[in-house]
Amino acid sequence: MASPVDRFRELLRIPTVSHADESEIDWAAFDAFQAALERLYPGVHTALDREVVDGHSLLFHWRGADAAAPLVLMAHIDVVPVVESEWDTTPFGAEIVGEGADAAIHARGAIDDKGALVAVLEAVEQLVAEGFAPDRDVYLAFGHNEETAGGGARAIVEELRARGIRPGLVLDEGGAVVEGVIPGVTVPTAMVGVAERGVMTVLLTAREGGGHASTPPAVPATARLARAIDRLHRHPFPTRLAPPVRAMLSTLAPHAPQPLRALFRSLAVTGPLVASVFSRLGPEMNAIVRTTAVATELSGAPGENVLATTAKASINIRLLTGDTVDGAAERVRRVIADPGVEIEVRHGSDPSPVSPWQGEAWRRLATAVSSSLGEEIVTTPYLQLGASDSRWFTAISGNVYRFTPFHLTRVERDALHSHDERIRVDVWLRGIGFYRALLAAS
Image 1: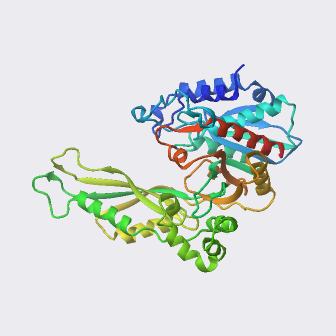
Image 2: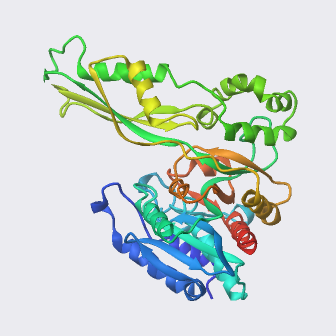
Image 3: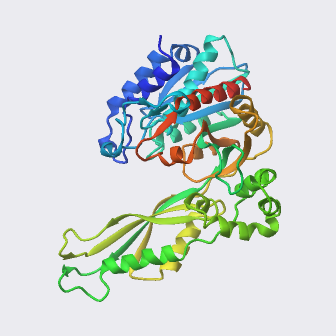
């Protein structure tokens, strides 16, 4: 009989890779994934109603005694592409490397986000087998294109909205159980995202007449573009502590040594200093205290001896809570200060609303953390740095949270979207217990 780990590894071997250009997607892999779920989790498919939304997203409905304020557990089916030559193992081989507490499953999607998806299904399958029935309705919402457009999750939200459903608690991927992330804080912390930054893409374009590279003009299009990028880099967005970050530091203050404890407890006065210091403590700390902007895609001439008639750069901007797409675009124009550089906002969404870190929904999460993952773990609000499918659910719920119940090291977190993504077997199995605890409280 297959074990939870066996089922997890089987699903990790199915390459449900998403691409922005959907013509490149192997939809047969997504069909195979759905078929595997039905075979591996018969209890889920018997006790819960299942429907396919937007072609390949899945919505399960577990009817409880009360249909009001249901619990929604989210995850996504798709994973990002791999560069196989960079991996030490086969990316979709789901090999177990190491022994004992160090044994880890190496595979694309091990953490992002099949780890959560399969842990949710394992928890529900176990509870169904035990005859458990939830006090209130439960929905499992699994989007198929979170890594690209997120259209699957949006379609699920529209279905729920049309049915008049207002979830009392929505939980998606997000922060994890970590140690040593906040300076001076060594206790394990469950970082629960109460909001996430907005995201936008700005296209910069510089143009010129072109010609042979042997006779360049004084300021070619590529140089003008490079100057614009350099100005953005040298003049970053200002630092500040957004409300979720202030709440995080206040929560963790009792667990910080002096003088940090005093600093974290007096943020009304020390906030600007703390934000300034955090911005110098590495990429993660910098990203929680300011809107970030970075050039990603670059393009120029079609040949090495040809002047570019058009030089372009995509600027990826992640908006801190309180900033807006319009405000960021205006600041980009002001900092670049060059009418020869066209500035176009390709797409953008403002930061999500902030969910409360008090009340029934928050207490349910914190209780599930302590009862399943460890009483010593401090549950704290957190500002999620990346975007997730959960942002669409803020349209129908005021209690949207982002937390993945796995104890992850810095090296493991760095492997997300990179090579050698992996999760320790014991860590993943404990995550199942978290979802069981949360479901039992529904």
